[in-house]
Length: 295
Image (cartoon, rainbow, N blue to C red; front, side, top):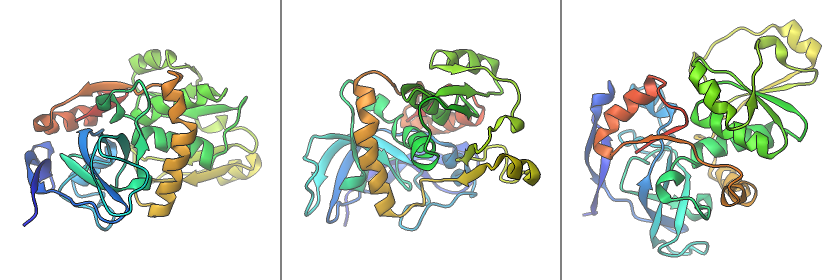
């Protein structure tokens, strides 16, 4: 019989109240895997969708335990592990299961927590900074001197994208439905701009990494053709393991030093204890946050 662990468990689909602090089977690290004792896990909008039955996890991940990221300490290593030792502080992205006391992950998807970042704040890094880094630089090849328009600039991904763009010498422009979030985002390095659809430049690029306002929209194809523009979609959660490994290793090499140098920082709105997971979900759904909400 396997050991148990504490976890925020979803008994059924529904309102935030379906999230309850309970127990689940403790995972065991297999070959090439590490067992991490989780210190913090960030909330993401995908969690809200999964809670109501609209975003099932990839195969192999529990439908009952939400959570797409983690930060914690290596407690056990499986056979063949070479990168990590017991006691190392690591963080990373998940297909699910982050709202738990332990997660078992492939060792090469884990990233070392940067120097100077506490474990609690590190839980605000993986999903949003990896998403922003991948979208801006690996997918869109953003380069110094360009201008990027970031929607929902006060969100976790938005605040991350602003900082990464600024660090790369890119002018960042942001939109938000909340004026106060625009004012706070100015401190991270973005400029104002009115207008939206027609601002894409010649041979410009647009990347879609989330659809909080709905999954359908209209595109002026003549305008798209005239500007020779590129529109691309991206998502991290369902990518194959090897792609996640490649992203993690590149992220550790290119982005983590920016945290150690205090060029970029995790933006934490509020941290909730696990038993207040329903309140955390309500806060995220209400768009109260500037930056990340953590458990």
